[in-house]
Length: 102
Image 1 (cartoon, rainbow, N blue to C red):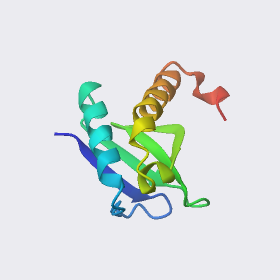
Image 2: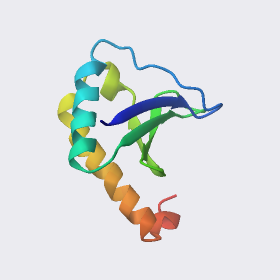
Image 3: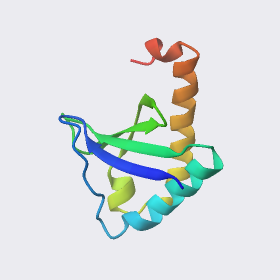
Image 4: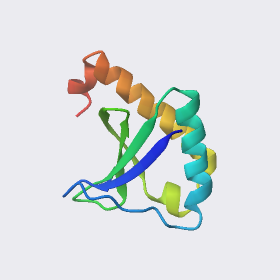
């Protein structure tokens, strides 16, 4: 089963994504992660901009973020594409190209 977490980047504390429209998005994230072999996905709320949720796939924290409106507005139709972009960022990082992404 895929575990999805939300954490504050400033202090590491967990928080819940409780918006009513988030349930469908979370279901799609879980399905994407399961299909792509990730047992856990973490979204880190940026300390400077609360609307940015930095993506962590497995153990890899990425240089890629998703806007919180994806969850709060229930944008489930875009989440698969966004998670694919995150996986692309993970691959760039693994290949050593992440240093050029800043």
